[in-house]
Every structure is written in structure tokens, then in C-alpha cells.
Length: 203
Image (cartoon, rainbow, N blue to C red; front, side, top):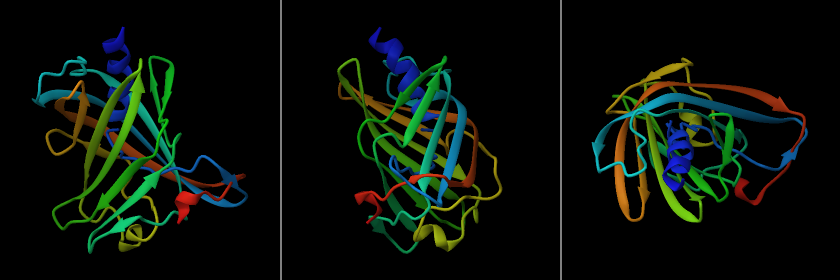
């Protein structure tokens, strides 16, 4: 039962394919806030390293990530920015069941002339066990402008295809790490929320 649950929720968090995230949410709300929504759909595999104890190879899922575009990064470099994602920023649907992040996660956007990337890091508690996931999505070079280093922003074009091994999903359970490739798509859109409130993670 434990591995069946992991197969469902971590996998999807993978497809925290990441995510994208891609993309960075706020659970509270205030009128007129612009919200970025990223949707990742894909299949995990092949196994790149590890023994895949949760049996995620070949599994598929959908992950939806939302974030206020007013967020500011907690860490930056000349070509990357990392944002905190509050609990509830990641929602995974597997076989009609939703799984939501319950603790703070992170999202990192990295720009490169060879290709941009989006990485999500999160921890889940599944059947009382901690599962750590790291998903990296490889996007086209120039998908973002430099403004994404200051605030979350949508990438273009959207959607984009994801392929293994440049896009990959890593999970660790019982101290054992497994890395799988990811094949699928990632897309994003934004809209003005009727109600998103300030949160300490904005700072």
C-alpha cells in the first residue's frame, strides 16, 4: 500500500516534472494579484540510476503548480533565481486523487545559452514516511527573459516538450535515491486572481 501510494503521489510530483513548477505558489490571497499556473504532464522512465523501490518507472501523472508573480527570490546568481513555494503550491492528480505539498518547497529557474531549466525540490509525507523529490525540466534556450531572475514569469513558447535524460525526476525514500528520465510536456498561463493575500514568503 505504501509503495502504491508513493507510485502515485511522488510520481506525479515528478512529472514534479518540474516543475516545472515550474511554478511557485501562494496559498493565501489578495484582490488583483497575478497568478502563474504551470502544468506538467508526463511519463517517468527509464531508470537512470537507483533501483526504483516505489516502482515509478513507466508511470504517468499531472502536476499543477501556482504562484504569485510578485514573489521575490531568496537566492540569486548571475543566471539563476530560487523561489520558496509555500505548502499547497503543488497539487498532483493521480487516478482521480489529489496530493498536495504540505511543507515549503523550492523552485529554481536557470538561464543558459544551451538551454534553460526549471527545478522543483519538495518533501512529502506518505503513509507516515518522508519522501524527498527533485524534478528538473529542460526547456529551450531563451524560454525566459532576465526578468524571471527578479519575479516568477511565464516561459515561451508554451507548451514545450520534455525528454529524457535532460529532464529527470529524482526521489529518495528509506535513504535510497532513484533517478528516472521524464518524457512529456510542460505549459504555463497567467491570470489575475480575484483573491490572493500577502504571505511572509513574499519577502
